[in-house]
Image (tube, rainbow, N blue to C red):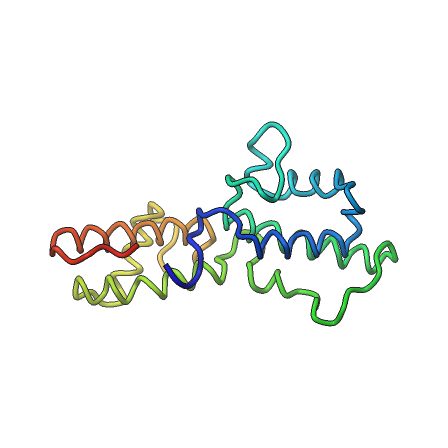
Amino acid sequence: MRGQPRPDSPWHQLQIRVVHVYAALAGMIRGREDAEYRMFLQANTLLGRYHQGAITSKDRRLTQLDFDRFMPALEDELWRRVDAGQARPPPPKYRPGYWSSRCGRCGEMTSRQRWWISRYWPDLRAAGGYDDSYLDAMIRHATAGACDNWRRATSPQAEALINAIVDRLHHKKEVTGQPQAQ
């Protein structure tokens, strides 16, 4: 499949490389010494919070949602250290706020989740003859009434909506005999 990775897929090599660059810029990785970075990874990912034992960025259980939570925290830590004089300013391409704006804050929907919704909703709308009010009804149902407009969804609510869209799309294609999307 092309485009954005599924929210539950593991981190890709490029993402791991980006994480390591930011951690090194923040001074969390010095040569082979990375204990501070590993503690930060443990504290700032869902897997780290609910899994006993050490994790690394190559752990296949780290999901895209973990990446979306971890990068803004790592970026904030980098700039906190730069401001405190504990790290050198990075090259200009590492501008403050990039990951925070891309990945959302405090549970907001991420750009990846918006992409998935915009990718699959037109397919479902066409397959079922639905209008846009159906999408709002789907999120209401998927979140047990906690959200009534997909544009204001939190990250967990967006995940519920994505799963509902994909499930209904697969069901429609099974019923009509069309090949399923991968």
